[in-house]
Length: 532
Image (tube, rainbow, N blue to C red):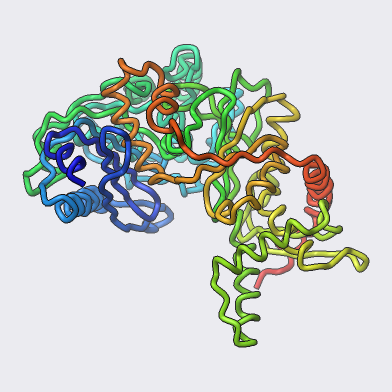
């Protein structure tokens, strides 16, 4: 504690703040990258007409509330006020659309990643660029506004993301980290900047509109991890800390997206590494050695904070249906007067799954609480299906629900591994699916037919990741690459459990996924017929 107090007093601690969809979190780290203080602020998006948004007032209150919470944690733990920092960084949920005029006025309410209103723009830009442009990307929002004939577009002088907006307000710098920028517009991996050829195609596409701007004029600058991205201005310090205690002049790292900070927090920024986050939803990110040959609506392309190309498969559904069944078993147990500890119940049922047949004995389930783009569904209905002669046992039942929690993800990843021949040395797993030791990890290894590792310490998530990126900026000369900094300083000696895929499990999962794909018309019929 005395060491942490001294580090804070001397201004050697680094701070990262990440704006998540329901919680904003700040993490203060010491010189070793260990979290020494935490602040949080809960918030929620609102539906403004047909737009999911957070108001500027929400954003400013969230920023100040998170910092106030963290400063209070520092004072309560160490008896000192937070006055200066070695470095500072901000990250947030990626994509979305914040457009401003020449006076810096927000032209329309912030359109978050959650809005699915850009389908036409997404399709047309994907065709034009021969590069997948997801609906949530910033350029899709801009082009959809153009297609809709929205009046504000002619007044746009600058557009950015949530993290980019906060960074701009605190430093005056209109920049993004390359990972966050890759969710606005495609990045040219060779230059680490926005793709000039695609910018030219976009300008040609909208030339008949007569806008006074060109796309390059209204995009933010792009910076890789480790570069200086401005300093905290006096006005920015007051915005962050209205008490006036925090001093100006703190260096800031490039603002990043939650995908990039997740890669940092799981030490998966190097080529041929990847990470899988499995909870309510599930996504996998794999750092590629080269560009993909094809264009796939199932695969998004972004970059690491250093600018290496990353393929992302994202699925809306993972453990919600699995959790619902565990809750049902919990209710049954309570009916007999058995009060099972929830963690023990999960552990028992998850481990029971490992006793099941590798192919789940012919059972089938779909965990679709909502739509699933990888398999072409805009709505979902949770389903469990079996043949009269299927091997219906508790072990097979639980194994089926663990398999199906990764079903859509496997279909997406098979595009990378089978069609594109992507190689991955190791995937790092994190999230609720991996809490029961060895089970979710083994199932994931079977799904991807690659080693899967789980770290013993989970850190503080994306907020910790952006704090590390801030600290890395101050130590880049010492360590060189971000990968070297993470391996030599942050994760050196980290206890990691690695599981190799079991061939019987791999074969069983492949048999299950064949059944899963053949049975998709069952899910379609449920969506079409179960309407109330």
